[in-house]
Image 1 (cartoon, rainbow, N blue to C red):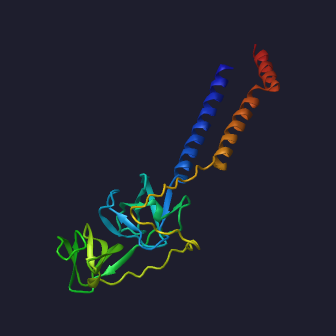
Image 2 (cartoon, rainbow, N blue to C red; image 1 turned 90 degrees about the vertical axis):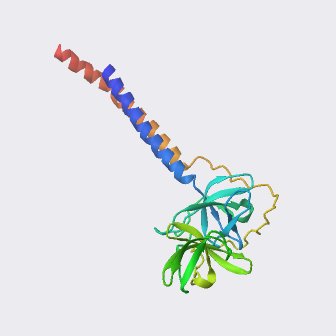
Image 3 (cartoon, rainbow, N blue to C red; image 1 turned 120 degrees about the vertical axis):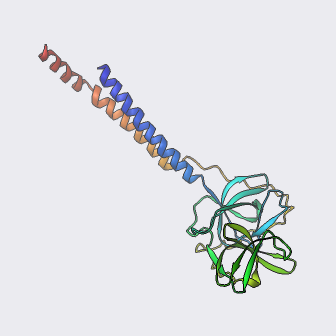
Length: 247
């Protein structure tokens, strides 16, 4: 009898542990949040002090939210390509649309630009006088993340040869990026300036997912069924009869 009770308890604990792991993984997947770029001119900043603009994110695409401050989200820019390293940056909460459903791929475009001049210098900042990190030669390609205007010129933020930096738009082909497959909202929110003081919008707390409830019910029903199967009067009577015959 004691041995049977131990077996039942161990089985219940095993099922409960499995259900807990499944629920935890489900919750983790559901907890990923996305920020959609629904406006023009949404900058990705290097720091939360917004003292360094990296580039303008591509409109209609998505940035994965990793963390947040009072006014900003810390996001990952993840082009859907093996040659594009994931980079992090900050965007203003007021300038993007919060999404809790994973986007249709690609979340962010993996666009490559071809060097059209003799060479294209990849610089540390969008300035002709900035330090050159590396140079790509004619017909080579660089990985594109976004663009920025600086001192009357357009620069592209790119990755090449293990370095991130800026190339002058005159030295490479122009990006040709279509809108994301998911239609933009009919009335996009208005992008606010960087000194915006509007209270941050907090995502609503989601109720307990139905799948978690079903898992809990399943564990309880299974435990009760096993207990009844082992300890119903009919089963006890059979065990006693066998025990008496053995004697």
